[in-house]
Length: 313
Image 1: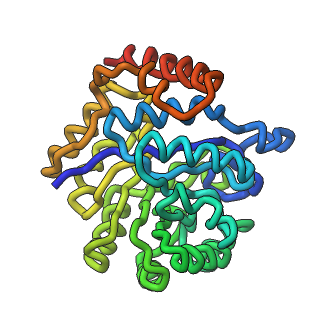
Image 2: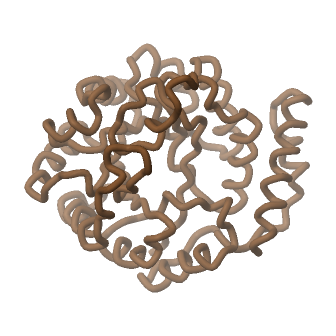
């Protein structure tokens, strides 16, 4: 069996909702408009080129709800799918069927940032992000032949008795992929003093999901203080790994440890977090169907990333 690193491509660090109790986006200053938290298109495209050549899967394209316009999303989805030569998972909040039809040429499925299925806990954790719109999105996605995925965060207050709710939800909406994260207590959020969920807790949810849904694609989110739990999460039934600052920490001892943890679990690690491949990066940019000005911006950003990554290797 093999595993790999999945890179989530973020386009912003702000959100028009901004009140989810666990999320770092909720800590942005009130006087900073979310649309000013956007990353440059060039940086996102450069990151996608890196991910492709390092053998990373694109977990999904995501960012704050309401930050990008429809035209901006189309432009970036088209560029990303062109680079990786496949369609993309999209996670930008609940979308209508009409919106999904616009993105249909570039996306393979939608990810609902559902976080928890316990209805009372969900109201507390995500007061402005109810589940119903996501459920409607999943129904529309199914009608359009799109895959459905969801997120679940361990450690926010759910109990193991809630597994029956999660099982029912996955079955009802024919969810084919789930991202199982462990809470990262963020400074400035109501959950900043919550304890980090244990390896055993995160592994329990993964193992239950694997037993109930043998073909479910389960992705485990970790953080740099939790690298040593990877082999347990993979052994519990996770397929892939995410939530690691792979560009900033590329080639670091932590990156090497991830590859070692995969081997410890008996998995072949596809791709690399430690070795930069010999690639003509400028040529890769030139291949893209972008205008010359954008190519120049992408080229500049790509070389900035590579320069920083070489420091650790």
